[in-house]
Length: 332
Ligand code: GDP
Image (cartoon, rainbow, N blue to C red):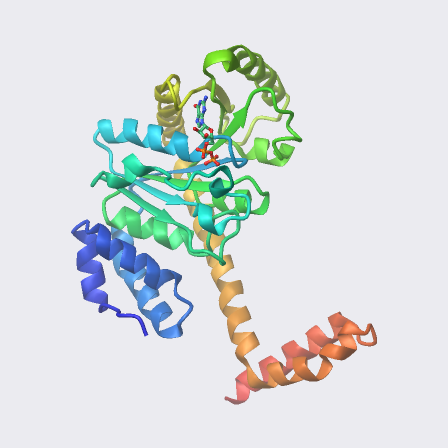
């Protein structure tokens, strides 16, 4: 078994801003071991008063759009402004379609060598577009450790966008000029989720097409109904190579923060997200307990073949399994 600290050591380490302990605590939170999960949840509860003070930004876009280059350059601007920046990122080696396909193994080198930054790749295997089931928890731990901007990177594969959108304050979509929406794998739904669009790599020969793309996207966004918070998503041209436009992205996010806080939407969005998280946790725990139940396991083993062959209605078996689970619970 891996070496573990006690709760107080994790807590004190995180509150003192130790990146090493923060990293170990995230490993604990990501662990599937029941004993680890118990400490992890106590740890988060013990730190809860120290969480919530960051700006949480989700960053998405297809592989190759330049997410890690953007995060590196954008993160640097934030550091220069005195911010502490945490990045919860896709691990390229764990992604089929990730950066490694582009031969780009050394991601965010500058940022990761800076003491005021913290970069955490997602664990392999358990990720959905780079977002693990524990990204929310990791985010809270980063906040308790004093990071005031959290960037959550995800690859544009659909489901992971919804997961990230549900845990961040601002959702940023990186796009390229010249590539059709379909080519970029961007569905309309993802565009609707975005609070801001960046036409990335707007440099050199690409600047002209980027300007055209900007006005096209602006027009497309104007056709969408205005969100409840009255925010209309902005489109910004940026280059992480020249650095142009990156300050505008930050301005946009600050403007969003100011307006949402003034209108009460910042907090109501977070309140809804916490309820969403509760629902996720209930589903997860119920499922874990359910599938561990010996009688349930036995009945699944007995009837699996009947379901596979089409003789038994899965709905009927599911109902029986729930009955078995519940009667088994009440007698134990
Ligand atoms: P990711 O897969 O979305 O994380 O994309 P990367 O950050 O790995 O970038 C993919 C490629 O695009 C790399 O070769 C980068 O050097 C290049 N790139 C990233 N940002 C820019 C930019 O602003 N301008 C230009 N011209 N190239 C860029």
